[in-house]
Length: 342
Image 1 (tube, rainbow, N blue to C red):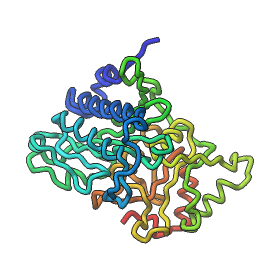
Image 2 (cartoon, rainbow, N blue to C red):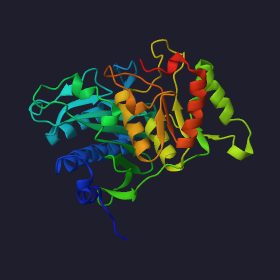
Image 3 (cartoon, rainbow, N blue to C red):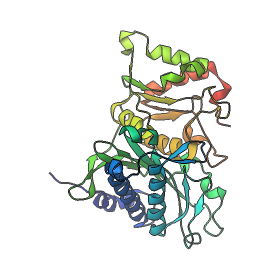
Image 4 (spheres, helix red, strand yellow):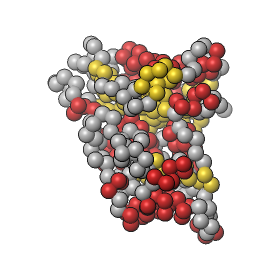
C-alpha cells in the first residue's frame, strides 16, 4: 500500500491552494514539527517534571500548566524560524507577537491555541493544538490589528493536532479536509483520513451538562429535545464529552453529531461563552464547513463574524448540518441576546 507523507501530499497538491509556491509547505512543515515536539514532550511528561501548574494565570484568567508554556514556546520557535510569519497570536500571550526581521516581508499571520484542553494533562487525557493562517492585509504597512482581526471566511488554512493514542494532524486549505497520523517509526505524518466528510446527521451530542442550570432557556429546551425518546429521529442521542475542543471536534468530524459550548449566565464576565473566536472557533468552524458541516453561534454563521478584539469569546455550535439546523431552530425561536457576539 502506498504511504503518502505530509510533505509529499502538500507538494503534490501545491496548485490547489492560494499560497505562493512552496510557502505553505514550509509553514505546515514547521507546524507539524511543533506537533511532533509537543507529542514527544507529552509522552515523557510524567518523567520530566513538566506536569502540573506554574502558579501563573494567563490572560484568560486560567491557571497556566507547565506544558502550556512549553507548547507556546515550541510554536514561537517553529514559526519564527520559517521567516514567513510576521505576527503570532496565541492564547497564552496577552498581546500579539511581531517577529523581529519578519515584520517587513512576512506575508502571514498565524493564530494558535498551543495546548487546548490542558486541564486534561494531569489525568492523562487527550489534548491538542489548534492553528489557523491568514494573509497579511498590507505588506507596505507595519503589522497591525487589521492583519489580525479578519473574518474567518478569509482564512487561508486551518487545522489541529490531536495528541491521543495516536498523534493526528487534520488541516484544510479550502479544498476539503485531510487527516494525517504520525508514524513514529519514520518520524513523519502519513495520510490516514483523506477527504473527511462529516455525516449529515449523527447520534451523539457533546456539551458540558454541568452548566445546564446556567444555560439560556432555548439551550435547555434543545438539551431536553435530544434526550427525549423519539424513534423516527433516533433520539435520545448519546452524550460524548471529553472537555478538550480538539478531541470533541475530531470525534464529531468523523462520526457526526453536534458539539455545543453555548453562552450561559454562570460568569457575568463571559456572557458569550468560554471559547475564543480567533484561534478556537474560527479554525474549527472553517474545518467543519470544509467537511460539509455547519458552525454557528446559534443565530449567526461563525465565519461571518467580524472580530473586534484579540481574545474575543463566542458561543460555538458545530457538527452535522442537519443536527446544527435543528439546534439553530431552537436558538432562533428563543432569540436570546446572549447569542450575540458583541
